[in-house]
Length: 105
Image (cartoon, helix red, strand yellow):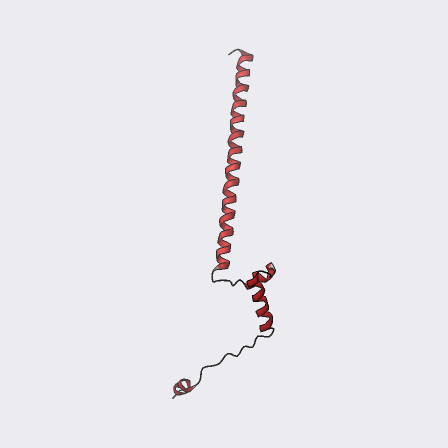
């Protein structure tokens, strides 16, 4: 009634996927080359599987590295500002001292 019995008797749908450009012999040769260490670097990179979360981890690591670089550059700029402020104060003190000596206050 209302299709309930039909869904119970139906077979599950099958997924038939035939790879288009898969060559088992070529794959075996590449794997053997990698095992022997004769494979080029590009073939080794193709063989590495991505794991769930790899992209997110890479983004997080890039953000962390950029934050560390920003902190280092801020520290450097703060040191320059402090040096400039100290030189400015020393200059003002020397200027004030010369003005006082000139006018004999």
